[in-house]
Each structure stands twice: as C-alpha cells, then as structure tokens.
Amino acid sequence: MYRAPRGTSDILPGEQGYFRYIEERAASLCQLYGYERIDTPVFEDARLFVRTIGPGTDIVEKETYTFDDRSGQAMTLRPEGTAPICRAYIEHGMHNLPQPVRLYYFASIFRYERPQKGRYRQHQQFGVEAIGDGDPALDAEVIDVAWQFFDSLGLRNLSLQLNSIGCKLCRPVYLEELKGHYSAHVDRLCPDCKARLRKNPLRLMDCKKPSCQDIAQSAPRSIEHLCSQCKEHFESVVKYLLILGIPFEKNHRLVRGLDYYTKTVFEIQPQGEEGAQSAVGGGGRYDDLIEELGGKPTPAIGFAVGV
Ligand SMILES: [Zn+2]
Ligand SMILES: [Zn+2]
Image 1: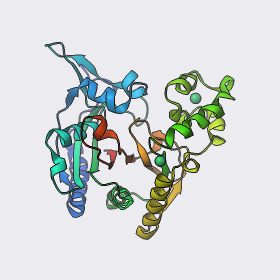
Image 2 (image 1 turned 60 degrees about the horizontal axis):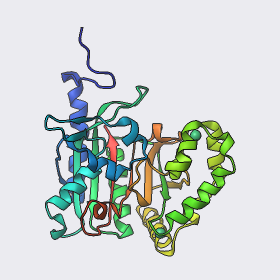
Image 3 (image 1 turned 135 degrees about the horizontal axis):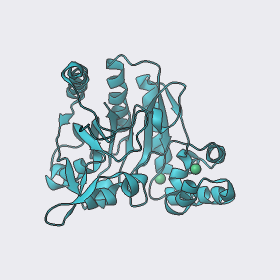
C-alpha cells in the first residue's frame, strides 16, 4: 500500500474549510495593511538558498530537498519564503516602485525535518515581506500584522518575544564575546554546539540541551553590544510596540535559525512555553539580504507563520 510520504499530509475536503478560513483572514488583513499577494516557484536555483540561509545552517546542511534536474542543474524545493521573494524583487526591478513594497504569500515549504510533533516535511506558510524601508516603524507594522493575524483567529495568551542581533558593524564584536564565553565552557557543550562554536556561534544561543541552556543563560547579550544606530533602532521598535499596545518580552536568547537576519528578530509563542518548537510564527529584519543577492542596498523585514 502506498501512503503519503512521512511528514506530509493530505488535506481532505472536511478540513478544507479551516484552511480557507485562515487564508481569508490573512488575505483581508493584508489588504487592510496594503500588502499585495505574490507567488514564486516551488523550486529555485539551489545556490539562492545556500547564499541566503547560510552554508553552515542546519537548514542548508540537513534539511533541504535538493536535486539535479535533467540538465544537471541543482534545484531546491523552497525551504522558506523570503529568499525567493527577494530574488523576485530584484529580478522585476521592484526598487522602482514606491517603497516599501509590501508583499504577502501563501506557499508550500519543504524541509527534511525529523518527524515529531509539529514538524512537517511539507507545510503551508503565510508570510509578509516589507521591502525597501529601514524605519523602525516598519518593524512595528510587520509585528502588528503578525499579532493581528493571530488575534483575528481568536488565538489568545500569546507572547511576543523580541531581540536585536545587531548589524554587520556591531555583530562581529558581539560574536567574539560570545565565542569567548562559550570557549570557557567547551567541555560542557553538546556535539552540535561544539560545531556551532566554529561555524555559526549565534546559534549556540538557541540550543535546547539543558547543559547548553545554562551556558546560554549567562552568555553576553546582543542588545548590550549594539552599535548606536542599532540601539536607537531597537529602542524605537520598543517605543512603537508600547504605543500599539502589543505586549512583548525581551528575550536575549532569541536568534532565529537563518543567517540573514539583522537588527530586529521576533517570535510569537504561546505563553509559558519556550523554544523554537513552540513558536507559532516569527520573523525579523534582513537589511543586507537583497544587496547580497546582487540588488541595491535595500533594508527589509518580514515574518512567516506555519498554517
Ligand atoms: Zn549595529
Ligand atoms: Zn548544545
């Protein structure tokens, strides 16, 4: 007997109504905030994701569905929504439009996850991207869209976790501090973290192993190592969230799993739970990503939610 592949599921007629309801909520909220829909291909040139997500990340190393097509070109099934949209922004000259360009999407996302609760190898994401404006008011707007989305679905007792991981000026200094801290405890680190210490030190902060969590708890905090511009930016985001009345907690261990984030990172979690597994959505700023892909320097921010 054939079965749906592990980590995937059929959406039968009886469940369609739930998915359509969520899509309609999201679409009408996006319309209200001036976000327009974009669709990109299910697969892209594999190099796009290696370049943007980062060669040392778990996603690129262990989780992508990558294959050579019949002409021998490496293709990857979309493991996240942001990089393809940035590729499209550049390809279609969207920097000529009034900025920021506000976009949203529903997309199938493919990751070779270890099957466990809440993890799928194919799932649907709703996300928004606001591209072409570095103003902290835009961070607050995107967080507000995410917050209103959950609110419109009747989800309560959520908490917004907020952090800033700095920019290419202040982050290297912070990473050195972080490496110094972890090097002093290297014998207590799990094998994954030993590798992260060399390849991707920021990710040390979100290891779920108890012994590593102790070390993270006392680790230097990125918000205490921000340059004056990042510091001012973070303070403004905080001020706007207070004005909007969105409750938040500063979480110095929130770093997100992708290399391209700068400054603001955030997650929305059910209250009283912690860790990436429990987050219902998240996002952040990625001010260098479009330039790294060959576009003009273009600040941007977005978030995504697994449906
Ligand atoms: Zn900075
Ligand atoms: Zn660890």
